[in-house]
Each structure stands twice: as C-alpha cells, then as structure tokens.
Image (tube, rainbow, N blue to C red; front, side):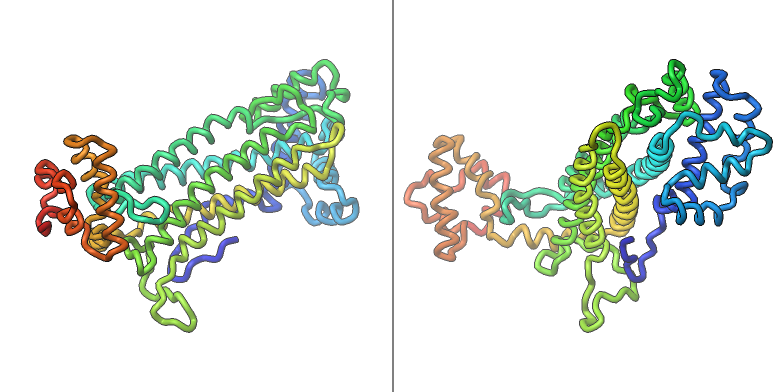
Length: 429
C-alpha cells in the first residue's frame, strides 16, 4: 500500500476491500450459487437443493475457522470452502455443491467478479479526475508558459493546453476500459480440462445461465489455458498508469523551484523532511509515479501468465491472479491521489510568464521566421533567423539586437510581426 502523505487525507476508494480474504471467499460462493441455480433450471440438480445452496452461500453461515484449518491441512484453495458450504446446507442439498465444476472455474470467475467491482470504482474515479481537469483547463486556458521540447524552450503554450492533452489521453483510456468489458468479464465452466466432460451436452447451456446470473458473458471456449482477456485488463491498467505517471512526473518537475509554475496541495503542518524545515515535497506526485511504475511492471507478468502448459497449469493462474489483484489495488491508490492532487493544485501564471521571458525573445523565433518567410521565403527566413538566434546564444547578446544587426534588412522583423508582437518590438533598436 502506498504511504499516505502527512496532513493530506486520502480516502480509501474501496478497491483493497474487494480483495480481502472475506471478499475472495464470498465471490467464490456467489459463483457456486449461480452454478447451482443454472443447473437447477436445466434439471441437472434438484430445484430444492439449488435453493438451499443459494440460501447458505454466504459467509455468515459458514465456519470460517474450519475453512482456514482445512486450507492449512489440504493446501487446496477451495475444497475447504466447498466442505463448509456442504456442511451448512440442510438435507442432501450439500451433495450438489460444486457439481461438475473444477477449482479454476470458480476461482477465476470469482476473481473477475472482484475485478469488475474495482473496474466500476476506476470509472468513477476517472470521471472525477476528468471533471476536475475540465475546470482546470478552462481556468488556465490563457495562462501563458514556455512550451518545452527536448527540455528546452520551443514555442509559447498555455497551461490549459497541457491539461487538455491529459484530458484527451485519459478519455481514450476510459473508452478502452469500457470497450474491454465484454471480453474481460466472462464466466468459465469447462470442468477439469475445459472440455465440459463432467457436464456433457448441457455444459455450454449451464455456463451461459451461470454467466447470466452473475451479469457476465460466458466464455466461448471455457478452456483453462485462456488468459488473454485477463492479460488485456492488466495491460489496460498499465496504459492508464503510463499516462498517470507522465502527469505525475510533469507536476513533479514544474513544482521544482527552478520552474515554480505549479504546486500540489501542501496543507499547513505538512512535514517535507526531518532535517530540512523548508521542504515542500511533491508527495502526491511521487506516490503517483511510484504506483504507476509498479502497475506497468505487472504487465509482463500477466503476459507471461498466458504461457499455460497443456490444458491447465496452476503456476500461471497464480501469476495472473497476482497481476490482477495488485494491479487493481495500485490503480485505485494512484487514481485517488490524482483526484486529490488536481482538486488542490495551485497554478502560478506570473511565474509562467516570467519563465516565458527567460530566453529574451528567442521563443518567438518560429513565429518571426514564418512572418518573415512571407516576404523572402520560408527557408531564407529560417536561415536569417537561425543565424541571429544562434549568435544570440553563443555571443550572449540579446536576440533583438542580433536581428537588428543582421547584414540584410530582410532579416529585420517585418512590420506585420512588430504589430502582432509589440512587446517583442518595443525594445528592438
């Protein structure tokens, strides 16, 4: 879990609670209940038995201490839970629990139920982030700053433009997440080797009805070796994390004293260092960058987990489960910190404007070149402005002075440019 910044309240978005032991057990019970209902509808098991299984498929009816003891004894992830549900059911209903299913059918489908709940939280978090960013973009659309490429001043931009870029990218992540729902959140019931041997001809119909009960789609091929849909979701979280990390890094950089253009929330009482009292550290940004890196590191693990041998391999199930669980938990933490960061972000337009002037007008070189190009051609204008700009840097002379001293009058700023940029022309000799 990410360390909570001092003096900043980071509300738990509820994702970690979805992956506790109790939540995991209940998701498996939900799948067992849906399976029993589906089988009763098809006449595979008695209707009264299915009703009793559904009634007792809740943790409050189970002896969890017995389940944990069974886990320690058997080393099996679900058999002790099946025993406990069997024991909780009255009559002979317990004998129909887990009918025709294999462990991975229940555990994988249950995990995807948990991930789907986390998915809904992510969409709500992204909605809050986008709403906040929309307001920020509108508020800062005219706040000029130096646009930077390769770490150097390029052309003027606005902070609102920078925010709009983030919005554009995040919107595509929302589209990707929604588009993947039908592929990712699927129920699996293929039996021991994924061949439906235990259920026979009604197998696919059983899977379809079970999936419907869970609000999911059935797998078209319920093979235990298929993991691309789970790997896809981890990859989507990795893509989202890449954008979040980029945003966090930008805020981290612009908060440096050398830039001073923004500052993330630093409430009174926040301590940045045990030895340096002046420190106002970008804790939220650092948390976001760190979480994003960890999420991206899970993508190769999920892709490796697709390499399942023969018809099933517990090794890759463990790997995929870890990638999904950790990916979801970290994504919830990361997005919650983005919400807090942007809701309290301070923007300093005056400092942005000061930074814009650092190059002494060099940042206007492209605009000057294009305006001059209307008179002497684009490439000749480029050469003239290039000579003046490079001379300004190498000779430590003002750019305006170098332009005015150009050997050909055509290198001087044209009237149209001076009219459009009076601040540039005001100090020109």
